[in-house]
Image (cartoon, rainbow, N blue to C red; front, side, top):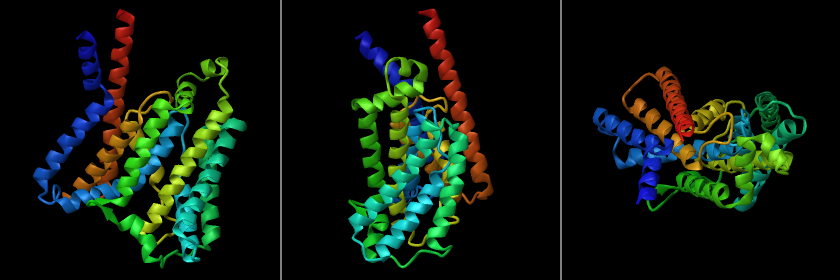
Length: 325
């Protein structure tokens, strides 16, 4: 009985539960302010809007679990989306297009992993450099032109629905579920947590930290590569110079709100998922409430501060419990 009570209290005090409650409260507020917010069409729109950022956030979360960071996610998305459009326009099958985009994303992730793990360059500097390199490469590949005119079969991925739910959101759910399984039941997932929690202890335990970091960055790139194809299909036109320009900030915001720590070793995939949904609900609600778009970033920043404050309070409470026990 005591174990059940402790487990229940742990769930109620978790970051994920608090975010879930916050999503419900914010949704109720926006539903009162705007009649259109709770309409089925707008709910479907929210699902579509959070899908791309969500898939990318799950990928970047794998790096954040390590104590790393990836500022190049927007540039990787741009390159993969542009290449997907060019490949499918050349007459290649859809499966080949997706595989090529994922492979390109993996190569970008390998570059980041090599800079961080092998050359030991701080992640923020390494990914800032790769961000500009990859963005420049995307512009060179496309010649600075818009990529458009995709086949209808290709557009169906990003714009289609199954059982009333947007296909991109269903893919987001699938990616989240696979990532959750990876970190809970697969050995490499637990090793990523171990490296993020205490890299020195991980090295003493005999873990190959370099390989683990490389794996996380490559998997992150693969996930963004998948999102790139979906993004191209959803939007229908790609500009390599502007696509994903603010994606890095939005992803980090969602991850931090979801309870992940920049220092690594903390957080869950579910937290990242809920963080993405919360930001999507807030952004959609503010737009329907006719709030100036300039206030959206300010509100997002405020939500991040609140999330960090809650996170800090939880850490202090845990430390006090450990001290008392």
